[in-house]
Image 1 (tube, rainbow, N blue to C red):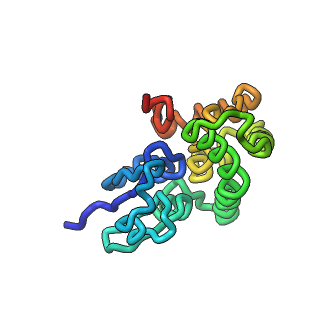
Image 2 (cartoon, rainbow, N blue to C red):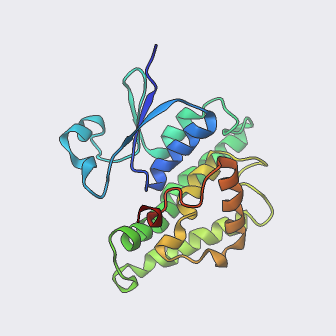
Length: 207
């Protein structure tokens, strides 16, 4: 009997939780290996042998092959499922939003959250461009969600999972989601679809 896949991740990381939530949604068997990023566990010799980039998440398949980068992993896991639109254009649109998430969303919202909630920096110590560009990203999402329930199509897709991971904890980085009511309502819909508790992945839940 083959062993379940291994997912290496830090349960506080939105990028890692994307992989967990996708696997859970699809009912896939996996073994979660907790890796504490803040404690430097991604820089150990043992972990670097798994992923030389020193990053989580990463997936170890049953055949021993390793896949890194959160959005690549969830796309691999969801191949052939309803989380990937059947229509080729909608599939490409989903990828468009997943690429945008890593380039224009996560670098600002997730980074500001890390600096404020994990590193304990004050607002005055954090680059103000992180707030400005993070709010711009939330504004782009707000416009997208004015007339739709999900980012692509009429049902949840990987685009929603990719984007909800850090959007739902943006308040921990100082972002006020009351300014983005469409985004806030969408977060609630996606959380309901994924059966997430409020505290899932939150720094406050660790106290």
